Length: 102
Image (cartoon, rainbow, N blue to C red):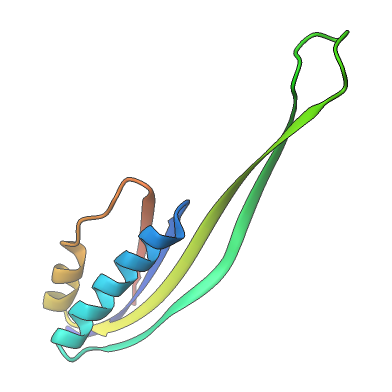
């Protein structure tokens, strides 16, 4: 059964997400599968401002922390066997994968 798999990756490391995308593309090229992407989605910036001193009498200085979440999307037009090979890719802990089939 052939179908379309939309694979979305999100990671705090852009290089990890890109390496997974390159692995998916190489599997697709080996099996002669049509692929669209990778499409870079907007990076989400999470910013948290905290006060440096916990006491109220200290100076009014603040620290600003930022976390960037990089997102990528790829569409794979593949059979069940190809998707099984794609799912066998080892994924680092910093990468989250969401797969939707249609």
